[in-house]
Structure formats: structure tokens, C-alpha cells
Image (cartoon, rainbow, N blue to C red; front, top):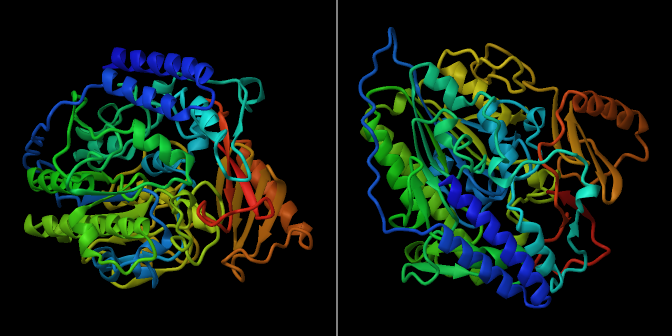
Length: 552
């Protein structure tokens, strides 16, 4: 498997380089060649039944610890769930988690992009402590984007970073860009405590065999091996292509419909991807109902490419402003149904009362899907440290242990998921430095006040800090400081850096002290992506609109 991956990487680079020279203005041929290389190097077989191992009976002493279920969605905006008072459609099953548990009204992602958030969720540590600063991307990614950007109609262009410009001298091969094996994951901690540990879905924390889920503490793993929800020409799928988004063009050509179980060969999933992962989660729960288990259900939904099942597309109706919005709503419906089915599976197995469910998204909604209200009421998007990029749905439910209908107002973070889960399991983290906080004492009234005085986000030279009701962002492109008093201005409308130099100095000192404790990035950034703060890519942004460049 590792050898084939090296072949794929070499093939992609050769094809991308050769075609870039030969077809300067023919980006579609480059993308098609990369897609072809992937399909040749990674053949996909027919569907294979997944047989989850019987977890056996709990053999520990005393009361059986609770099961831990983490459901992570991808690119779900704050306003994509109806529990916040909006949304394209009702999300009754996600809303029920909040009604029966704790809704964190100020829940924050570890980052405004997927991979670092996932690293923080599973370790309870700022990913910059161990150099996981940028999202792993194949070496061919930047050359492909560079070619595509020549035809990009957006007024502000992607900025490509030459190696000598990169802020770090470190680098790793693409396969090794991931969560270092030395880091202690939630799965490793829980397995040490007698738990069965199960992963389903997206990983994005390294592709080397030493970095895949089973090498990072999971007993079994059903891995998302690529990113189509169904084959593009399936009679059961409804597709929505976004012609205004560069990345969308790449995804439709390069992604395939594939899964892998326990590091085996690739095969076709059985049905629409969100439903397929849910089917397997239900089976995994049944196979492990007699002992404590940790299920990490890491959905691809509702990330692009926009693909809905025909049934969901028809079920949501046609009261939407355009086709892509209807497809997106149908994708949300599938994720919401998944939550309901997981809860029902726990009830059917008689273990619902003894299960802590944590539901959240890896970051906010993306501007490249072209929908203006997905992060409403907040400004910004995925790939920005405005609230729209980091302020995410965040719920915990544990019947009889956490009071239903609770609304927790203080800021909490993905960093808190690991220590909270270990607290529920009566385990102490092995790692010496944990940045997250066990939230259970706060939720049970044993502690009062804020779990965090300060939270920090960092992506190269774009950084943000939130401390005691204030928030500051600093960026290199544009070279700018943005200061907001979130306690009075949660929507980041009134920028105060010009009048509150004292607060800028205070937050800068805190940020500098934090940065002094972080590691250099393990690999460099290759591209900086312009993100308009107040417009989606479909909203005709201009050079006069506020923006920030996101390094990756």
C-alpha cells in the first residue's frame, strides 16, 4: 500500500509538471490526468461487507464506564442547524441532542480548517505544539491550483509560495504529513482504560501506515479513501457543480468513490456515503454493546463536492433559491438523520443512558459553496479566524449525568473534548501538557466561571487570540490588526485597534508568550488563499471588499 502511494505521488508530479508546460491554458487536461493517475494507482474493487469484530463483555472491576461517541461533521456552519434559530431546513435529531443535553452557545473549533482541528480534538493540545500547523496537501496540489488560477475570474488571486519564501525550513513527504505518532490520542488513552476504539469516516491526519487510525489507537477503522458521496453518474445522486470555485473543478475530476477497512484494499461503499457511514456505525455499536467503546464517527458531510441522495433532494422540497442550495439542504438532512439513527442504535442496545455523545463540526461553513447565510449571524468563513470560521455547533448529551436543556454560555473548544471524555471515563491524561479542560465539573456545578480565559488560533502569520471578552486578529496579507470587544460586539462589526492600543499590547503579549511555546511547522505552506470576509465566492466580490489571505 505504501509503495503504491509513492508511485501515485511520483505519477501525479510527473503528469502535473509535464502537462503544465505542454498545456499552459488547458487546466482541465491536467486535472483529468491526475484523476486518471489516481484511479490507475489505486484501483477500487466492488463493495466488501464490513464485519466489525465482536467486542466481547466488559471484564473490568466496578461500574462499567460510559461509552463515548464523537460525531464530527465537516464544514458545517453555525446556521446549518435549526437549534440556533435558523438554518435551511429543520435538524430535529441534532436539535434533540441539545434539548436532552448541553448546548454550548460559544463552542469553538480548534482551527478554521479541518486537519488541525482534528489533531486538536484527538489530543487535547494545540496542534502547533507539535508542528501540525497547515493542512496536509499533495505536492501536486499547488501546481494544479496555480494552473487553474490563471482562468480564475476572482479579482484577488491565489498567492503561491516558493520554497525559499516559506516560513519554515522543515518539510516532510506528503504521506508523512500528519499527527506525529509520539502524540497521545484520545483513542490510545481510552484503549488503555479498557475501551474498544472504533473509527469511521474521514481521517486527514496522515497517510503513512504509521499515522493511520489503527496506528494511533483505534482497534478498527473504516476509512474514507476518497471523497465522492456516490459515483457522479449514479441514478441515486443529485450533483451541484460550483463553476465559480477553483477547488470544485479539481474535486469533480480527482475524487473517487472509495473506502478501506482496517488498512485493506479500496472498495466501493454501499450507498450514499453519509448513510453508509451511519449504517456501519449502527453495526459497530451492536457489535460492541457489551463493553465500553469509543466511536469516532467522522462524517465527510457536508463538505463539497455537493452531492445529495435523490431521496433527500426530493424530500426537502423545492422552496430554495437555487439548485445548489437545495442539494446542500438535502446533505444536511442526511447528517441529521445519521445523528438520530446513532441515538436510536444506542437505545436499541440498551446503552443510551450510559453513553456520552459529543457533536460538533471541524470548522465553520465555506465561502466557496456560494451560500451567504450558513454562518449567520457571524462574519467570515472557513479559512478565516472571524467567528464564522471557528464558531461552530457544539453539543454534549449524557442522559442522567448532564441536565437536559442546559445552555452553557462560556467559550469552550475542541481542545476540551479529550479531557472531558477522559473525565467521563475516570481516566487521567498521560500527556504532560494538555491545553483542553474537563468540562464536566462546570456542567455539574462543581466549578464556576470560565473554563478558558484565553483561546488562540494560528495558521502561519495569520493568528487570532480571544481573551476575557476581547478578540484580536493579526495578519500579514493584508498587514493588519483587527480588535473586537466580543462581549459587546459578538458579530465583529466595530474594529477598535486604533483607539485601544492598551488592549492590543495586552493581547499581543499573551499571543507572543503562547507562540514561544509552539513548535515550528513540520512542513511549509505552499499557497495563500484569498478569503473575502463578508461575501461568498458567488457574491461577486471586488478588490474593495474586506479580505484576508489564508496560508496553507
